Amino acid sequence: MATEKVKKVEVEPECPMEPPPAAEVEEKAIEPPVTKEKLVDNTKALAIVEKPIEDKSEEGFVHRYVVLARVSTEKKDALIKAWEESEKSKAENKAQQKLSSIGAWENSKKADLEAELKKIEENLEKKKSKAY
Image (cartoon, rainbow, N blue to C red; front, top):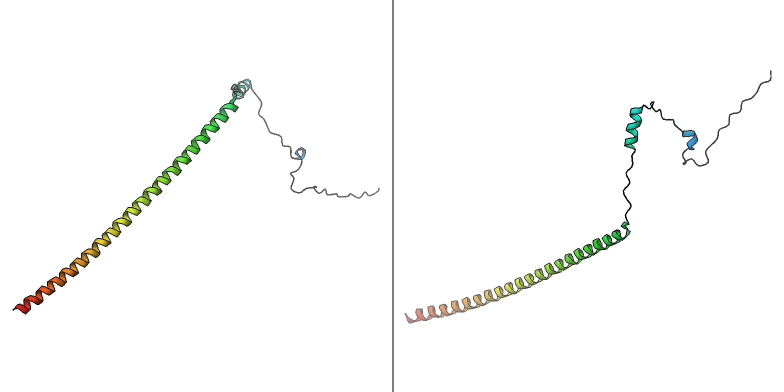
């Protein structure tokens, strides 16, 4: 009897990242036997209702332009509102600054008049003390 040597050959895949070919991975699904009742149910479940295809390309473009116009209008409105708020706050700040400057002027005038009144009172007190 002649002895035969068994050679073991390993095949390396060309690309290790690729999944193995579909023929090697093929799995068979086990399906239960089909009865008439199940067949009728399956056909009902698989019924496809197709809606008539409408030409939505023009509607899509019109809708797109309407939406874009609405967005640009909202953007403009937001910018206008922001500008109005900015102008309003500027005017309020300017008015507050004027009021504070007027208040400071009034306070300085009051202080000047009070100082002058105090001097006049002191002079009167001196004259009274000299008169007695």
